[in-house]
Image (cartoon, rainbow, N blue to C red; front, side, top):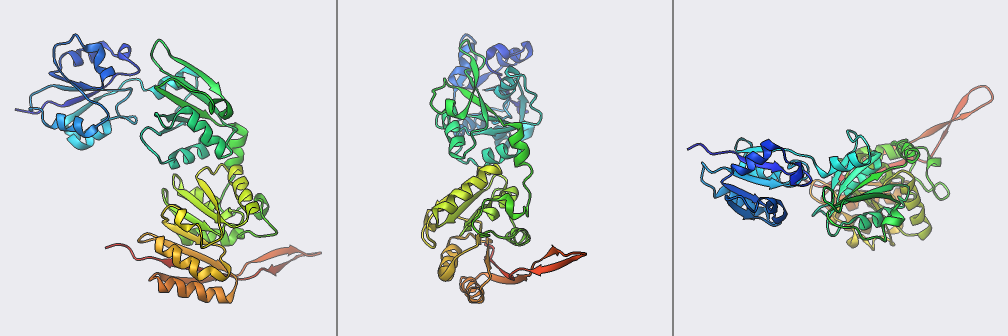
Length: 410
């Protein structure tokens, strides 16, 4: 007997959003699967019902156990393929065995309530997730970001996170119990939302200030020094910055350590290439930490965290890195490189900048001692200076860029 396709049917905001055709699909089922609130409107129907909680493995086991000829309908919230269970069921059961029936999603309904077109909006789910990288990347690049919440990542938590990142220029539209008699929504500042309790289920649309977004989007690799707050020229120069970022071989989702971060310019520009990845910066002096945070806020970099510590201390508190940049280390450079290399994952890359001959030798030897393949380049930048009837070139200090790469796992 041919296997009936499992129907994964989105209920929209509630059973009131179901069409006549969708209701007939539900009534014709031999087995109706869903959460308690999904099954409640169909209590009077005679077919077998299976209540499923948050355990997707339990639900998949039920689906696999069904005889080929049984008509199975799985009820889902909103649109099953928008942060829903549809993708998991298709992946596990095979696309040839599944039919998806979409409906109005809570995100579509939210944008409709506030009369905002959402074809260019970013959609992020914090439901059951702890990684804020996708949220940080979305807020940097989009005027509108819809965020699915959960019991831990509430609207108040989101507002507090924005305040912690210095992103108080956003507005938050919070939607509570969409599609029910208790539905309500309103706009809040992060400071207002951070101290409020909201009824669940809820979701948030975050709207950026257009002027602030234009300023953020002016960021690019190799910004001139005066775009950053820095201390007496303590900043990696634009041309060197560009080469360092190339040597780091950055990609979306990676974690970068910026050790001896100074102004934070390397980590901040790295965020353009890391997307939902993250930057962990370490700096010794409190005033420099404050400058890094101010520079990150200016350019909408919300996935950069700064730790005040004297290297090599503090590295054990950082997330495991995929890439490491060492912009400062002084007499402890070899020890810093050694400890960082020990945390670096297989295939990881470390880049060290130095203008000192002794540190060039230390960096090369420390990387090779840890088994990394080493490459050294020297950059000599000369800048044009105006003269009465022409220009001349003024040389800056040469910089050595030492790159090390760990072997890939076999």
